[in-house]
Length: 216
Image (tube, rainbow, N blue to C red; front, side, top):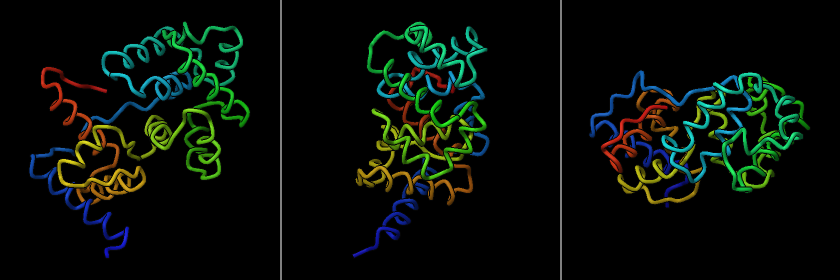
């Protein structure tokens, strides 16, 4: 029986080979934007789950960056929450995402994570990540997604990654397994993990809706 590490490497080779087979041109691929604005980072992390990024999430993040440039630090977000203005800030009314945004703001404030560079540093601390995963509604994908938003070279395993994996016969559902597979595949292709993540996202999104041109 193959070890888990060997299975990962075999699967990574399948993923990389298929990417080359379909004509992947990944070097220089535009990656998802990284932010220096804490409001945009937390909002993006909260809104992206289960929503169409281009039509629902991106317009809201763009509006936040344009309309609330001063809410780029956690202390400013704490005051926003205290004023009861989270819904207006997110342009969102369902309580689940509002509650998650406020929980993340509280978490970051309690740990004195005031700005994006500090968040980038802390996200590379295993104990911080373990604590972050205890916030209600935050899972491994949210953590990896947040890492991407602050410029850490990572891959967030979403439905596009899972669909791409199944195309090459990788049927394992475990999050960490798939993350390792796609990280290794990027390494085999000699591209950054964020570039490969962006390429997979664009390819699968265009396959599902070829009329759209996607940009992060």
